[in-house]
Every structure is written in C-alpha cells, then in structure tokens.
Picture 1 (spheres, rainbow, N blue to C red):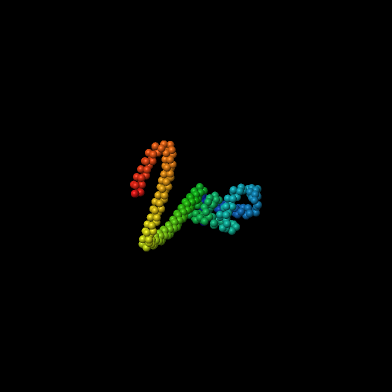
Picture 2 (cartoon, helix red, strand yellow):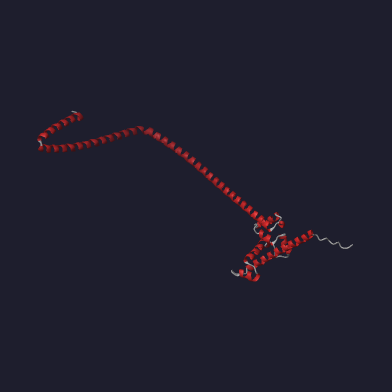
Length: 273
C-alpha cells in the first residue's frame, strides 16, 4: 500500500498557524527578556549621563523602551538562570506575548501567577487583558479602601474602648472621692454638734456680753457727739445773742426770754426734774 497522505484542511492550517504564532510570541518575549537582562547589566557599567547616549548610539533604543525591557526582565527573568533555550522561559510564561507581558506588569508580583492561572489569557485580546488588569486594580483598590475603613473603624472602636475605660475609672474615682467627702462632712458635723453642745452656754454669754459692750460703746459715742454738737451750738447762740444785745437790747430781751423758757421746758421734759 502506498503512503497515506493527510488531507490539508483549513482547520489543520489554522492550528499550525496558531502553533507557530505561539512559538513566535514565546520566542519574542524570551528574547526581549534576555535583552532586558543585558540592558540591566550594561546600565550598571555607565556613569551618570552616559546611559542614554549609549542606548541611542549602540543599540538604537530610547530610554523609555529600554526601561520597559528591563522591567520585563525584573518581573519575569530574575527567577530563572540565564536563558538556556526557548523552552526554559516558556515554562514560566506559557503563551504570553510581549504586549501581554507588559500589561501584566500592572498586576502586583505576588498576585501575577494566580491572575494568569485564573484567566484564559490565550483567548484574550490585548484590550480585554488590559480591562481585566484594570478590573483587578480597581478591585484591589476597593479592597484596600475597605481594609483601610475597617482599620479606621477598629482604631475608633479601640479609642472608644479606651475612653470608656477612662470614664469608668474617672467615675469610680469620683464616686470614691464623693464617699470620702461625705464621710468627712458627717465627721465635721458630729464634731461641730459636740462642740456646740459643750460650749453653747459659754458662747451665748460671751456673745451677749460682747453685744452689750458694743451697744454701750455705740450709745456713749452718740451721746458724746450730741453733747459736743449741743455745746458748740450753745456757744454760737450765746455769741450771737451778745451781738444782738449790743445792737437791739429790746429784741435781745425778747429772744432771751423765749430761749430761757425753751431750755427750762426741754430740761424738764427730757432730763426730768
């Protein structure tokens, strides 16, 4: 029998193209990672200001592109020894294109492997992968925001608990102080009561004597003041009567009689016989 010749179909051709495409993508990514490895190595050999010039003149890279390639190496190449073949890196990054690998740099390193396993990355377009990464970032931001809010609430609750404990302590201290003050007041009341009972009579007599002495002193002062006032007025009246006697003896006689009658009646009424 002759050799069986497989029939070439569009499905078979498409499968072959996809295999070649995947192999090419792996090879391109692996090569870019290796370029990034060497760029990282070279950058450490230059002084400040020489790096950009070397990139442009020696390898035709802009600094932006060189940074992207070094980031690829940092993200995907440091975990591997120097590339031994296309399969060595392919084990780490199955079916990743260069563009997909760049997009995945937006996923935190600790989450990247799980993220790749959770999505069908081979069936996603560049735009779809970017949207998936953006969704992950938003989810992580929301999670971080919720965690921050939770931490804030925990801190608030902790602070409230501390304040509550402080208030309880202050309340207990106030209650204790109140009890001590009440006991002290009751003690003072009892002491005052005993003191009052023991010295009430003596205190009353002392106060009565002091009051009588104060009244006598007050009345004595008033009498002395009135006497001095009366004496001064009498002297002034006598002087003016003498003047009137010289000017008009008749009028003087009339006023003298009036004043004598007044003084006699006042003495009889106020001072007694």
